[in-house]
Amino acid sequence: MVLFLLITYMDKTKFLITLLIITTIVLCKKTVWLIFALDLKQDTQIMFEFDQYLGFLAFLTILTIGFWLMIFLLTFVIPYWIGGSLIERFKEIREEKKAKRNNA
Image (cartoon, rainbow, N blue to C red):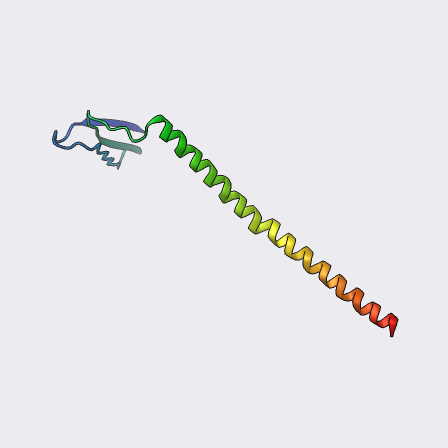
């Protein structure tokens, strides 16, 4: 496998960073050639400042923790709670019926 990285500079009037990835797979004598063409500009723009990046990471962390907490609650805790309360209620109903039979 051979990787070629071609860096070209396109039109100077563009201000955005354009990333053009062309993946071409050419089978030639049992060898796969991957050709990547990247279009990079000199005037790069910073997407986040460092404090914004830390805030974004904190947001993603809290979101992920909340997601897995909800999955845990919905698949284990809530069914366990409902099942346990139903079993206890059935036991109370049985005890009430036994008490009525004994008193009658």
